[in-house]
Length: 192
Image (cartoon, rainbow, N blue to C red; front, side, top):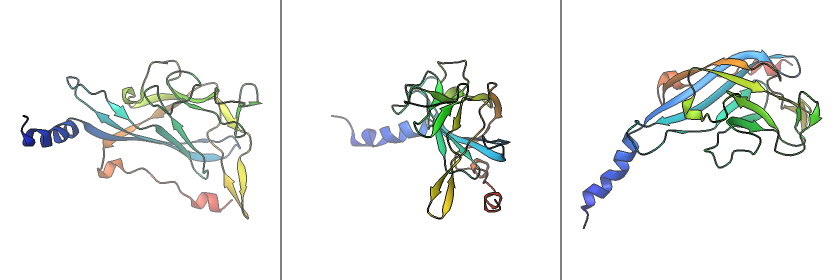
């Protein structure tokens, strides 16, 4: 019979083997409407030692745009909620919201890859990302805002480009002061 103390230590050992990090990037860029906005990417990882039996883990990468309520989540093949729009780290378009930029055709199903990180590498997973990465945006919004009562709800996002954006990522231990996400200046949105 196994000692009760050993059983109680197993969760502590499993939890203590990983190093936890927050990753983020923020940069100015044009959105599809031609306005300059701040773009923010963020995600978290759990890095396990090479000798450990568990693979490194990561949350989806969240892409947000200043003055927009649209939030993109880029996922890799390890994520059960990943879309069937290609390989690698990607986000699929949504019918009624997105159009494929090269053709201008509205997205009809969830099989159109609108965003990809390291688009030339279909085998990459989020924990493998380093402090520099390429972000390819291949879609544009069908409309940049939706009615929301008497207000308009912004849903615009980073302008599509045939050339990937080069993104520089900051990494900090999760929970540290450096891990706090930079905030958007929402006063820009109120002025418009």
